[in-house]
Image (cartoon, rainbow, N blue to C red):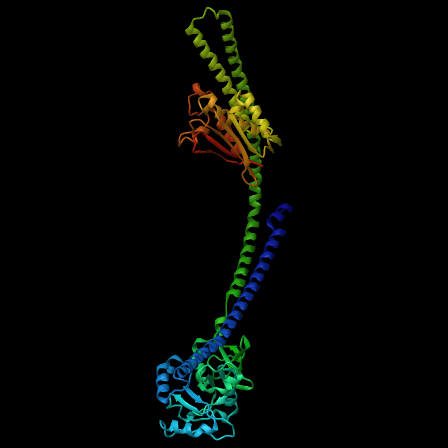
Length: 577
């Protein structure tokens, strides 16, 4: 195997470059996909963590609405409400259905020591067992007066909020701010398990006398409240089976709720994600420690990056195999190409020689045909010169027809030769600075067309283009317009226009006021030797428009026939800048 064969049958440097780039692209795609998956998973965890906090906040807002509904009921009743009316209100509230997680809803009245006896007398008139408990040293009393449902909250009836710091602090804060407040962590007396809970207070006053701090303290009547056990609240707010995160809620140093235990469903000892969020809630700050679960880990396992990596490796292997096959077949292809190249060179040389012979043949035919035509024309001249006075009218007419046919034949030969030159591209088409006004003036003068018949609108009128091509096109279109325009030469109107068409082309328009081109005949006029009107009427050879279209198409431009509303024929063509 010689050196050239070895090179053809082995890998080239660009083969290795392609393989290396493919491997780099595979590694990058795997890395990028891994990052995207990681970001997507982290975003999902962030979304679920935010959702947990938002759900707790939204649920507390819903409970607050219930408390203010109770306040509204009391205010509508003149600032006080009876046991029976509160029972009616709470029954229609349907807290077990509409407010899952809430333990009840009740009323706490503000009782000054001197008012205690009358307060007890009033309450015992309905419930003989009612008493305020436990005893304490505070200067005021805040006993739970009503609480529904009463059966499961019986131990709370009469419980004085002033006896314990967390309850009392939150109650006073609700009174002084006029806003709903929650207590710090407490154990509800009605709960046997003594798990963490809290109370939710909404204050009410006499009338609307709650504009200033002094007013609020002076006209404070009591509070509508709701007791909560954190475990029940979370069960009612955050359904465990619908979550892929677990939470722990702290109020300061005290744990209110904790799912970070091994017995918790889907507990993950080494969570993928962990986040701490704080929520300012009715005078307290709850800290949420949120962690992902095993279920989250399982759903986060995406095979996309590995699939991309494996797919990329397979593609790289296929590329190497393909290059090996191509390299092996390359030797045969080169040998075959060399043989074909030699054959194509011979055919190209033969074709070039044929074109030159054809062009020379065209000139010879034109010259040889013109010679006898010139002879016929000379003989007709001799006859007219020698015998013109003795020739009768019929013979003179026939001789005139022969002379016309000779002229037409000479014109046809000139047009055929011109068409051949342009279509074989054996002309000088270099670009130069051209003045369109001068070109049109030359065309009108050469074809004896009155300047008054022609309107010119060029913008721009100077441009760098092929003068020969553009002059040939405009000459044929203007002459065509003069032949097929208005039959009355005094009424003939021709418009020649040029403007910018786009970034790469100009748009030319040549329009006349003649009868126009019948519908369906638009392409007919561009065919060789085809004319719409008889040659005896308009003259010509039928090569002008065919030549125009050939030049325009060979320069990668377009020509078409418009349909002006006012009639006439309108030719439009584009030309390169």
